[in-house]
Length: 295
Image (cartoon, rainbow, N blue to C red; front, side, top):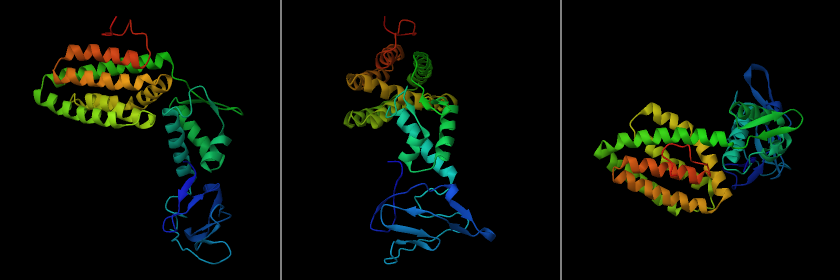
């Protein structure tokens, strides 16, 4: 969870770090570093330039301070940049896994408290997420998580159809490639069946991996790399679908098994039809104008 860190070598204590960022780090002359006004509040520990120790002076635990970098503990992010990166990764993951749902309005203060940082790194993370299209910022109101729109779903599905169909037509022309891809997909499907559908984060990750394996087998690095860029939107769409209907998880497994069968049979036309039906059903997308979708 954001804001919880483990102090290495000190009885595995968990500490909640309150507002450690660039505003609390001051540089002294000649590049030597010191820390001003930083307190670890939950384990009875205090921080000084010489190390970390228990309050009251007993039981000192010394940790090396790296001059010029100010490293309090290896897991603590002492700079605004690293705090912003941590907040960015945490919030983005929660958007992708629907823990923060599309249409939800979140505030800098809420995320700052959750991640135990000041508002500055949160603001930097929000700006980056806005640039990537995951949220819209409204001054003095907060950040709106952009919902998944039908146009976005259709565009991602269209791209996936083009890339995966192209890859499979390349694969079926090479018998050795069919054998190799089928083996990798069988392993993926076995792992997917073992996964707990309630763990939507892991379930959606394995789902995305199944389709990425197909795209990568097309032996076109440029197209494969482009497909990977769709992975985050793919994961978010799948997560939303499983949240919407628990039966979608079983449908995904059954469809993947059928897609694997078409590849093993080197039947590209059958794969085309099955893939279109799979994407239309899983993402609840009207499919009458998708090429290859069942009527």
